[in-house]
Image (cartoon, rainbow, N blue to C red; front, top):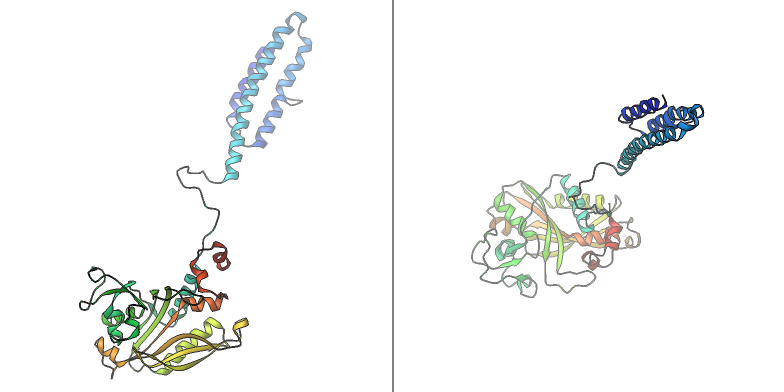
Length: 348
């Protein structure tokens, strides 16, 4: 009779274990089997009524049944523990994927300032125009009214390519040489040749000049230039546009001033300074920020526009210059050293 009861409990455990999914369900079911009032415990209490000569046989049957029941319980508990572990680890892991990097990347400080400047001009109708870093003398100099004897065309200032170099993706006007662009003004010329006014663009990009690196100079740097050409564009439009940029960038209390200067591609030409009381230790002085002016009629003529009908303004500034002021950096070389301790200070 005891053997029949044991077989019944074993069958019950085998059937019920497949439906147990949680630890709470497991502990409840285990108590009904081997707890103080469990079915297996009740059977073991019957040993007192078993004849003395049958006790060894019955005891062996009970131990075998306990082992069989424990085997099923252990299997269910192992499955429950695996499910609990996976729930803590999250979704299933694909072992073919590379391990995730614990560090979080961010835009470079110069890229952050570039995007900020682009966004400000985008709000007032300027679109982004880009060009190749490898340019030709015509688009970099000739079309911008920079004569062949100008110092900017000296070999000491520009990186010229071998004379036999041919590039299918960079068009030439004549048989001039290639060089790494010294400014993004070449983007302005290509845009004026490809599109008709009104034109309102900003041209961000990397430029190259043969400067000796120091705290404020680098042979590799970033510029953002602007161009607006349409009918009846005046110096007032230039001043109001740059006032907007300076106030949005350096604070609403910022002031600007224009100083006469010279650039071959603008007439009149100016250097623009600004003053802002919101710049901490720099708030006590005027700071030079960019060059600008009205587009020279000779440049308009070169791209096929009648200067009696069209006029425009242009400006150009160094992105590193703006970044150094905004971020309180006193040496431009820090931006190029790839020191993660420096770059993380500007993570957003």
